[in-house]
Length: 179
Image 1 (cartoon, one colour):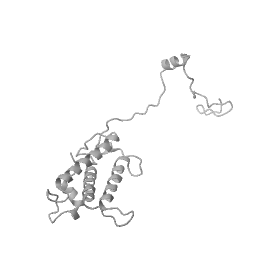
Image 2: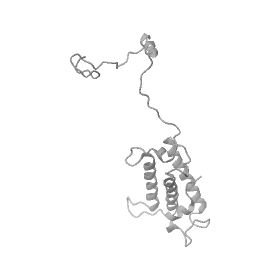
Image 3: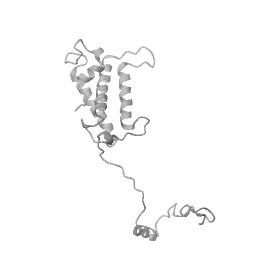
Image 4: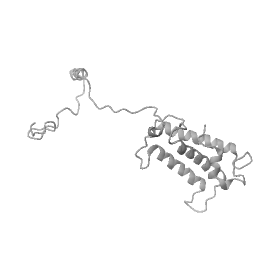
């Protein structure tokens, strides 16, 4: 399944197409090749989203569907351009296809990590998570504590309650200076 079509890719690659501005079986690259690149681009996008614990495929109703569709078309367009153009004129120069390829990865990173790398919560725009991390902030039960403390073979913990309290200093709990 792809999120974009060959006609969307043709918008990026007008310079490669004839007067009809569409991919056909006689164009170079062919519509079959473009569809193959769309399929592989879809796989790349879904692999990255799955790695970030989102369910795939991206639903049409989600707020990021258009972004994902453009990314999919960009992947195919980059490959279409690279299939035809490979001439570089000077060191460090990149072809149109390689620029599109780099842009694809940059935008995919923004999709998952957000601008600045702080992370996007894509559940706010219609994607669902395959698993949600849960923070556990708590201790153990009294029964477990007593069991562990009675175990003579247990390694003593490095930290314990009230280890930072010293006589004559402010008590962080009471706040009255008593210890």
